[in-house]
View 1 (cartoon, one colour):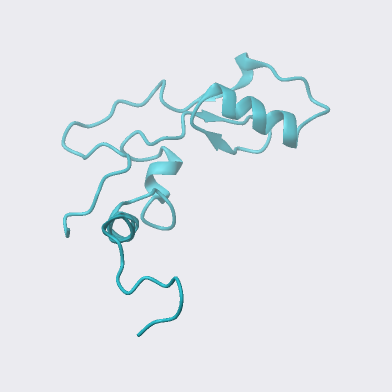
View 2 (tube, helix red, strand yellow; view 1 turned 120 degrees about the horizontal axis):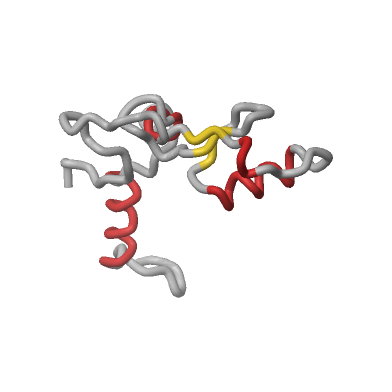
Length: 104
């Protein structure tokens, strides 16, 4: 017997959430480093800050970074480095992104 109001078994929803969390690549850690840096496969990071070389996936995120980290310097969109401009992704390499695991 279990205590009051404690379920005896896991619900199907709880099990599904645990399986999803364990088998889905969220893009963090060493596994997601290549996706975040935009050096190989044309990763997620599109813009690079000209002041501190921090990368961001879109213009809005870069503006938020700039306002937080460089408040005394005015934000100029023209000075941002576009990492995807001169890069042509190879079709033989898999595209970056969040993909589920093969072991389900």
